[in-house]
Length: 215
Ligand SMILES: [Ca+2]
Ligand SMILES: [Ca+2]
Image 1 (cartoon, rainbow, N blue to C red):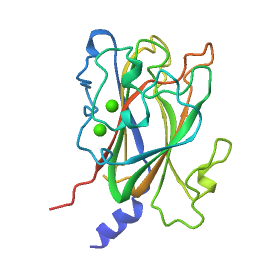
Image 2 (cartoon, rainbow, N blue to C red):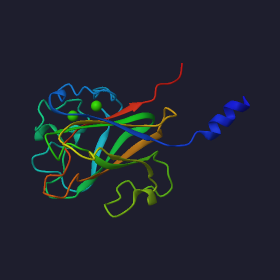
Image 3 (cartoon, helix red, strand yellow):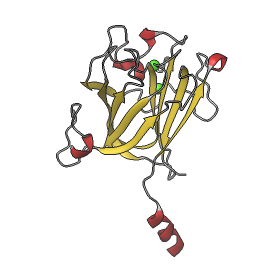
Image 4 (cartoon, helix red, strand yellow):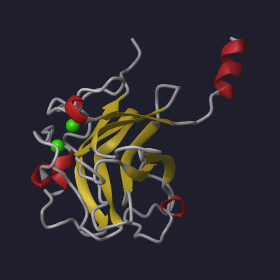
């Protein structure tokens, strides 16, 4: 018993970010990865509500609901099957409302593009909903962590070298099995490069995997 108590005291909140990168022919419409689960249709995000907080969605992009519709692009350059911010802009923020706080095991994001719009770069925040002075829509320039949000992870799949195009699967998870109980998620998305106007990621799907109750 004492040992268990000690182990629990040592449990620290330390979310990890795993990701896989499918290049060339390994990137298919099935979004199969070596270590990351393929996108799901019936995950906890499927019935979520999405709200744009800041930034402008590109005219060629689908609307936010494409992130949770369970559908995937069939090709590496299919703008209408992805969500991306306006070309030349520095990205933006959106919020996901799961309807009620749920125990979250994983938050998984998927993208696909032949070059600089493939990699993912975003900050992820979460809120349970009852935090004092929680501000649901903090604009760019305001640190959500000062408005009631908890910083969860910085996701960056930018390759150190080599081709950045391809398909990316990201999984944010914690070694304890739970990221925590949250109703709201805030995605603060950044451009992957500044050499040209084409650095806003083509996000194909975002899954939220609820932690299963222990038997
Ligand atoms: Ca999904
Ligand atoms: Ca989708």
